[in-house]
Image 1 (cartoon, one colour):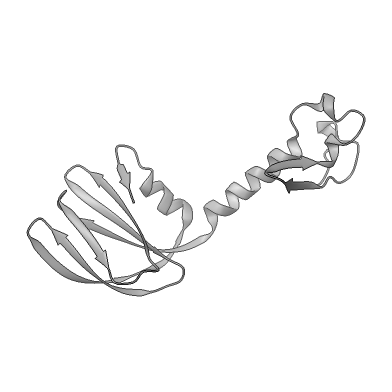
Image 2 (cartoon, rainbow, N blue to C red):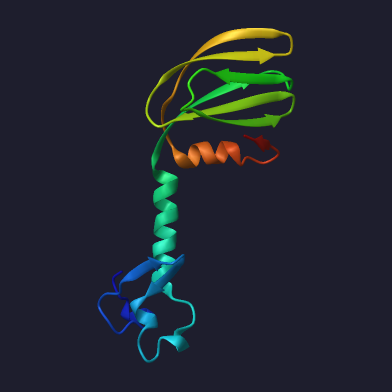
Amino acid sequence: MKGEPSMGDRLPQYIVRFLNGRYTCDCQMGAWGASRGLCTHIGAVIISRIYEELVKTVYAAIIKAECLDSELIILNNDAVINRVTQDGSTIYVVRTGQEATIRAFLACNDEIKELVISTRPMKNWEVMELLRGKGHTISQ
């Protein structure tokens, strides 16, 4: 992590490590390290990792069922399914490790439909936004 003199950094560079479940930084090792309090270098690394996770590409498909009594059955064991319910409908988010075409069955009330689902590249934040949307109930 590049040092920032305006933030009180005395060195041009700091190394942040993740060891034994904790972040440590070179700035905490010096004589004034304990008095520094919160390490901005660690904070910057954590924010950078969160950002990278949000913008990474995932492969997903969205299926909307206009009923609350529904079940999506996928014949591919590698897919992850999340279920979101809202206002009388159910939304299924199907995620795979790569683009895929999947056979599935959707049971909606008393009907069973065979579906062919194609996952496509999406940004992880788009999927997370849907899964964590206001007023949604989420289950796996």
